[in-house]
Image (cartoon, rainbow, N blue to C red):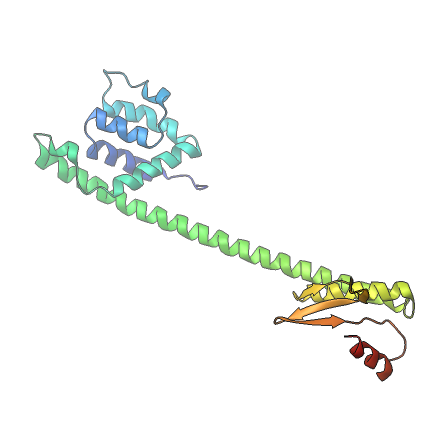
Length: 228
């Protein structure tokens, strides 16, 4: 939780806690359930009331994120309370339970509001992350496209050379990868050099790459088809 709890929310939680959980033993178990340390609980002397102890503990929890998370966890659990076992054992049950119900209802509204704020914050962060990832993808794609263009310019000076032919094979593979196609760079199969392969919708197409000045004529194409 990155946002600090408001003083009003912290006070509502404290008030609901003291009114809904009456006996010290119940309160101690509740605090243990929310990871209040044993070292803190040992500071609760037998002479101290639960209110005195909570008023000592609360400022210490508010100081850091872990403590505020503990308070928020308590608030969420208290907001779910519909029955008050401690108060049902009191002689003044008819007075105590309505007070607890009122405090819990106020806290429940505040918890609902803070939960909604947290959901909105997370949704906003997720949207921002998605936008940044998309922007990063576009930037990477643009850089790849620029690299492909630069490679094309370099290839022009190597037309008709063996080195240029090998580089052209790699360029075709890089182009296929840029467009997110399943591709394979040059390889040998049954003693024959394959310049590359591209698979589209489960069909694999073998690639014959030639970097030459003049268009390839039908005799070369016929030889390629005959060897397929």
